[in-house]
Image (cartoon, rainbow, N blue to C red; front, side, top):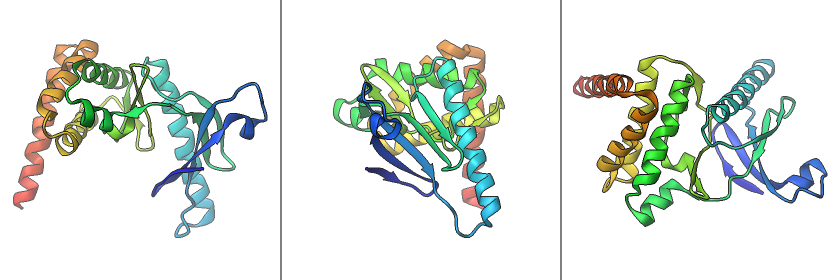
Length: 215
């Protein structure tokens, strides 16, 4: 069953037993398959999709090792350019905050997870509440399709800046207080010095954005 069609990949929801043939494990799985681009030469397209598939799987696994809740990986299929992973049964934080309002405990947990990713040299690249799922009180991070490995303050600042923008766009009524709580959780992992560096970098990013708009 198709879950989502995207520009870079399609998501399918399947039964574990139907894919792997094991009847004793009756769980759902997600298959993320990268879409073939007809405008690219076949060999180049295969290489790009294969590289991005392996990179995403590697970063998901690295995030999990770093203590960030993320889907378990079952299979990386280079022939199909797909990743077979655990289906996280829960509610997207987008819906959670929309219905429940400000949730300080969850906000703090988001910050700690983002801090853990950055401490491990992981840039998520698409930090929105649509890419976070609440399941059994835990916040799972999904869709690492734009992720990369980097310890650059600039890229980490952009990561947090984009999260802030996403909160302002989707949860404007609670975004300011929620972001403060997220930063508290972030600081709890990376320390106050690193937190201050990130906030200063965000200010610089926002100033650059304002200057470009004037031009």
